[in-house]
Image 1 (cartoon, one colour):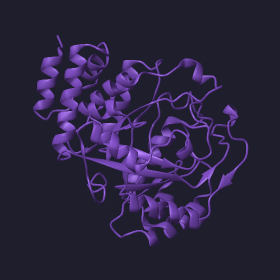
Image 2 (tube, rainbow, N blue to C red; image 1 turned 45 degrees about the vertical axis):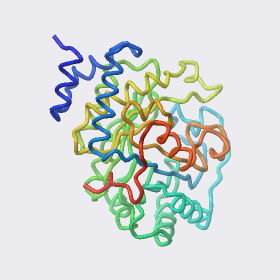
Image 3 (spheres, one colour; image 1 turned 120 degrees about the vertical axis):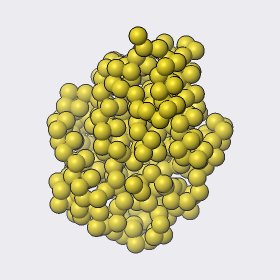
Image 4 (cartoon, helix red, strand yellow; image 1 turned 180 degrees about the vertical axis):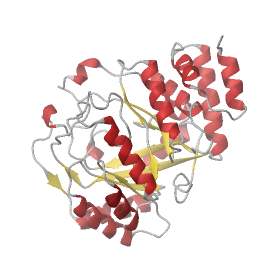
Length: 332
């Protein structure tokens, strides 16, 4: 019969927890003593493998447009009718955002687009941004599914990695087949890109078994980072009626995710940034400017988005020091 003490001891021995063990821990009452013990073990592991140094990554969006992928949790989805026209920034504005993030001390810089943004334009802007950054600055792509040839073009353009996730209830709450997401991850890895991922977007309706399955999947391809992020309800949408989980439940899931990862996975994220996430074992947050799929403002820096400085403050409040320099997560 499983118990929390034995599972924490197993983690302390450097072993990865099984799916059934993850389900057991995810099923603990969110405010019970055992859940806080799990969080304590997760933050211990995170501190141990990252030398007690947290990272802040920063993302800006090239464009904003209604998206036909219809991810019901996303403000870009056509069906949600939040944004009805397309806008995009210039290459010069993209460079300015990246240089500001670099100046602010971001450990990695992400460029995001909607799924149907022209890939050729993304590559050209990526090359322009790369040319203006310091050689050691880590550049990451957050884009739609790609074939192997285009994954290689990303690598050649100077990207170190990508963010890509098989979202919860992919193909049901989205119009993207789950196998397409998995295939893209394989393409990115074959092209020499390091993939960061996450268990997301978590809502109250998701079962512990669903969460455990996603944790096991993210661990299966040795990502740069995993972690967990809760769904932020988009006002007026059908999915908003399902509600949101609490920050404490989010920290619980973040902690269990850490215990489901091998020690080779240094990064453990949560989003949106919060002290409870850091206490539960998250060792990096994202700052954001421009479009944001969780926001109804065109410029998330005027809405939900955090800055590099504010993310650093949240870590400071959680007794984490910040890593200074290029992200360590994308060098495997």
